[in-house]
Image (cartoon, rainbow, N blue to C red; front, side, top):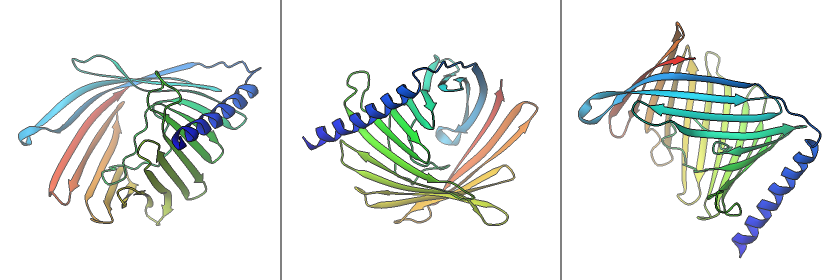
Length: 267
């Protein structure tokens, strides 16, 4: 009963915000010019028996901007079919933004993310007003729009250093994940970024810190039980319409180095 009341409350708030936005947009004529972009990628990574294998992939993005937003991300690999990886549709009127799709979570992210608390969110409705963002995730919106899986909220304080605090509450497991992110800490030669998460069920703090210098992004992460678990980085270099990426992750506990390399051609 408590969970049902919470679902109804969440849906009522979302419906109210949606109708408010619709009222603003009632007399608005939206015109948008679609923008199609894509890339062909060749990726190489370690396979079984210490061998290295390659994969050819194609990514195609379709974006329509202005007041309305439509973003579709398609991909395909050699010998496979074209799939829709992610999608978002939405609008923004008078500072109030609405976005529905499968890539609208508001938790801060990092580079490696091996030690941060994993939070799953499928299709969701995101509502943004200024520095505040709320996302309501659905278990299966195609069968029951009232079945809410989790709720996320975030507040970002901008400036020379951007600070974000966020939380995710899972209605099924009743687990809460807290997160805090900071970007742009000026250390003189470099700018430091970091994310920390706390999973209340697991009682584990996870962290990751990273910085970018001369095209190289390096990160380090761990948790409160094992402070140093992964050291990694990636180098990005553009030339002649192509982008070369080369990176590696070193698992400190397993003493395992995993290198990767990719070549991307954008169009």
